[in-house]
Amino acid sequence: MKKYIDSFFRYRFLLKELVVKGIRLKYRRSYLGLVWTLLEPLLTSVVLNLVFGTFFHREGDALPFIIYILSGRLIYSCFSSSTKIAMRSIRANQAMIKKVYVPKYLYPLSSVIYNYILFLLSLIVLAMMMVYKGVYPTWTIIEIFIPLITLFIMSIGTGLLLATVCVFFRDLEYLWDVILMLIMYCSGIFYYVNRMGADIARFIKLNPLYCVINNVRVLVAGHDLFTYYDNGVSQLMMMGYSFGFSVIVFVAGVLLFKKHQDKFILHI
Image (cartoon, rainbow, N blue to C red; front, top):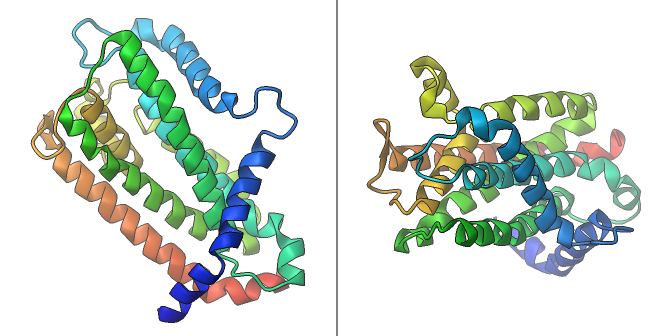
């Protein structure tokens, strides 16, 4: 374990450069650059609000519909972008991997980190929209670090799993796009899960990403994760479930990546 920790600190500057490179490449030749980090989720949420607001929003809902959508959209986009880019990171950097020794985990890890940084910047849009709509959270908003850390761990673990498998099974790139679409529709981004049938709602709440999204929405609405219940389901239970799932995926991703990383050079 000490060997891996020492290796991480030895290459921390390279990790930083890979993160900076990823951010620069994402907005290369874009006139607005980082501004798109703020505009894209806002514009997408406005469109979803116009399309679905009439059907799903009702007076008396805990959050304005656009904030409900925006919070879910931001978290899903972070997970989606992070895992897709991490999945392709080994193949995308195959030229460097073949020429010089660099710990291979730096590539998927840097992909997740720079997407997560952009996600944190995009939370500015959520904060601005909350002020505009008159939604002011209570002191419990400090608990938001719990679902955000859960999202980060989940993204890293999933990214490592996908990066490993994709080296040997390249069709996973296309399959993951389909799976992400299924995850999106099971994350309650633009509809209220508790207004669905009991069986459907129970199934959706098994999605750990939905648990993260719902935790954030509860905090934005001014409630406490440790005491609030949502239709009989404790937010504490959802928080523990999503965090436990994230840790399991993270450990599985690290172990699988470590076991197969020496074979990457033969397949890229």
